[in-house]
Figure 1 (cartoon, rainbow, N blue to C red):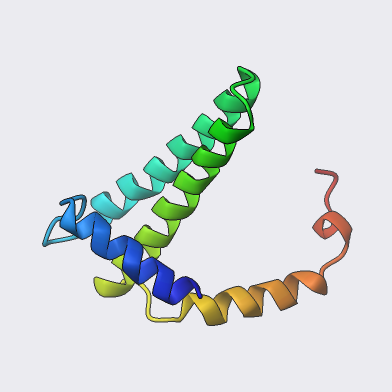
Figure 2: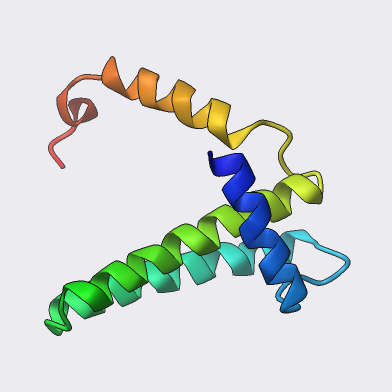
Length: 105
């Protein structure tokens, strides 16, 4: 599910030249911060009452950037695990954790 979708999204990002041929840690850090900026855009859409459609579009941007980042990191050797498998593993693990993971918030 995620592995194939991330490949498709990453191919588009590469075609649009969002990824250089040589990827380094600084580039990866910048891509992470781009995800943070998309999260901020969700918050601003809610804060400024821009409506459901705008909020949903911004959440879609988070998913697009996150899945593109995963695939780019996979292609460039930063990760070597299936996101599908890790997602399932993490989902199952989270079911066993205590409420709020034992913290107040």
